[in-house]
Amino acid sequence: MKAVVAAVVMAFAIDGAIGIWQRETLQRQRQARLLLEHAARSSLYLELKRIVQEADGKSYRLTMAMQNIDPGAPLYVMLSAVGVYVQAGTTLQQVPSRPVGEAASGVVKLVDSYSYDVEFTPDVANSAELIPGYMHVRIQSDMLVARQPKAGGDIVERRTPFYVYLKPHGADDEAIKARSRMSGTPPLFIPMPPH
Image (cartoon, rainbow, N blue to C red; front, side):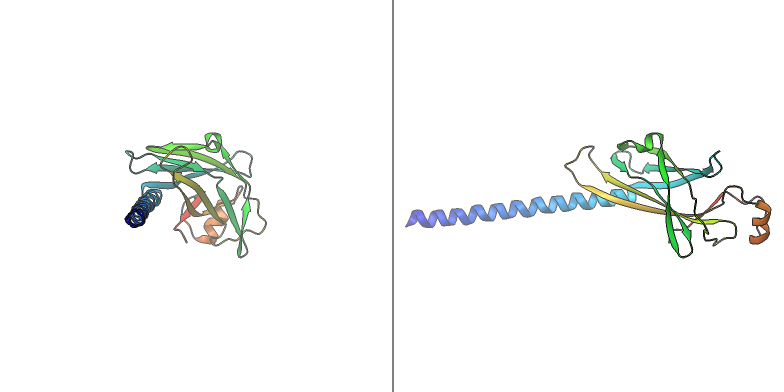
């Protein structure tokens, strides 16, 4: 009988120890996930640096720049295709876009900063002009962020939208100045706050 009682007590002790170990493991995993989410949102700075017109008379090239605010803790960033949308009426229509150069390649180890280019062709009939002579454009950068270069650790998704007013190829600067009361040459794009 003593052996049975000892076995039952031992089983409860083992079960309790396993429960404590599982709770602590889950807590560490949750903490690591929260720290990664925080790093992806606060340590990873993403900026739309520039937009230029391409020589083909219909496309544009944009440059995005990423910066790791904490260079002592590298981030591994997998870039997804950047989506570009032009407003037509009350809807946003996705337009063709493609990465240029190294932007198409796998995972980027981000210690300090990294820039990449995306080419897009905003061929949309009847684009909305919230500012006279300019298209209303949404640029959406999606990426996966991790602390390790290989699968197995936590990965979080980060989606960052940028909004700009974009001057179409061949736009008449004088007509834009007259319609919107601008002084000087109208810029190619006007950034907007997120909305």
